[in-house]
Length: 300
Image 1: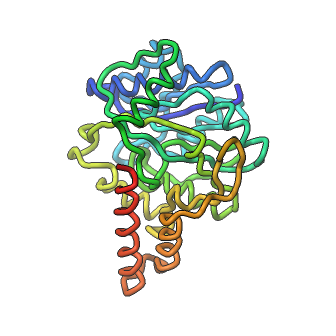
Image 2: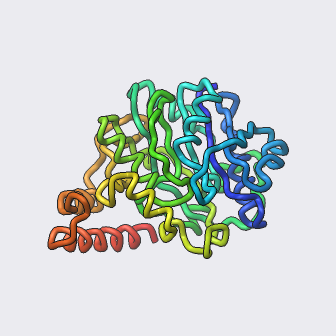
């Protein structure tokens, strides 16, 4: 195997979550014989689903006091149970399209060390996907017609050579912050952080947050505050916009100038160390609001 896809799905309890997670996992299996799939965790219904879909299941994962699996152990288990040159963590609601393995290997030929991330398409999916011949083009056309491009905030997939990210803080999976730290950490090494958006399309199947405590989004969960602290504070919560390379027409190159990238750089310069309140933080937040508004308008 050349690429191992690994994920820590939500419980297979809610009918809609069951549907979209099964859709996602089936799309991963269709990446071809060079891709391996690992489901990590002991959430309800995971063992049954793994057996039905013919993928490997690793049930024994370390958790925090709330019972949420830890990103550090998820990555460790994926590395222990694969021999692939490349690893790819992906959220369990993401449909991957054929060609990802070849695109990732192409990046590896150009960069021995890297983190590959990218934006997604958001699409309402309420039924099992039909994986008949031609399904990737049909689904992507549908996403472009009635979905929308998600703003360049966090990321839903991370491709990297297996020897990288051997030490990861004990983040809670499924909560905000850890994905931002992945991009920040790459920038500190420095490993090229590559925005694959121009060449790689992924599709996020929209859902609500009934599976989380109180039905609140992941960024409003108390564990998100812990994740942010483990990552070094809000200043270190990097975005796809902070990538220093992009994949365009198969070539890794410096990203093109955009207004959003410029605003994000200004925001980072203004953001004070230790998230210290004051004029700089107020200005940084104002720039962030402007960036988000422009990003949202561009996605619609």
